[in-house]
Length: 151
Image 1 (cartoon, rainbow, N blue to C red):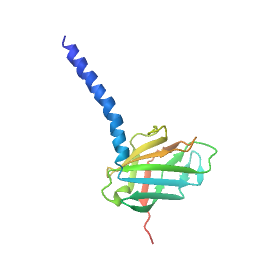
Image 2: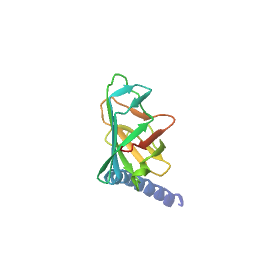
Image 3: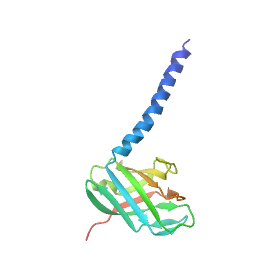
């Protein structure tokens, strides 16, 4: 008879996890500290992307960014647009750094292809490409982001 309370506790924990996970994802979408947009018109499949523009929108300001280490695994494309939601940013400099995979190669929200990454300062970025047939991924060495200082 002791197994019934254990089974009930496990079932309750599973139910809580199933309810909490989608709610947590919805809260993350609503509470992003910043957003970013990367646009490229030069794509070399399976090698990398040269980003024409990288913009971070944080606290009503736009910042230019340099992003290295995101690859495209689809042939026959000429441009890519990637949108990101950024979390745990205290100041704009927190965005800079080396990012490693948090959930690489997964579908993140609405069926869009993307991945999650995190830097040494605890900043998390969830990147998605909504372009049909486009699959973006993190390079094995990770992603490097730096802000471009205005002249």
